[in-house]
Image: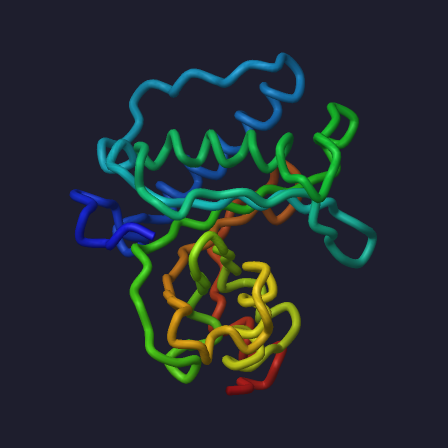
Length: 222
């Protein structure tokens, strides 16, 4: 991975307001729908706030809405700020709908059955051990040689993992042994995310409070 200090003027999640998140999540939805229907990338809307044109990192998650739950339908993102944030969101949204190798491309018939979630990421920072990982705050990147994997901060909340389990699952995601985080050859990074989501398909867009979700769902396991 490239060192965080190499990147200039990167937008931080702390600079993103709810209004910005509504713009980004709405544009992610529009990008998905337009590409699925017409096979084309949408143009940037007029009047985009200038800060959303700064380099940024983001993931877009698509979930199918079930009767009592949600089911992952696609998730793709970018861990380095090589494009303006709003372009990153558009590209991640299209990729989540059409390029996630775990799923077939999203179809037009499914568009009304899915909700969109946009995670705006901070620059990753290196850590020395799993005890530095804060569940409900951090996502992780595991990197060794050609192997790299990431898990968003939402993931351990779903399963009530502790920090060491989260690190082990990150190692598995990277294609490494579960205890790879104990190996000095392995680089472990953490990042934070500001997460916006649709309550229902094309519905109200809100901010997820991951720490509160973790405490409520898992009882604050450490």
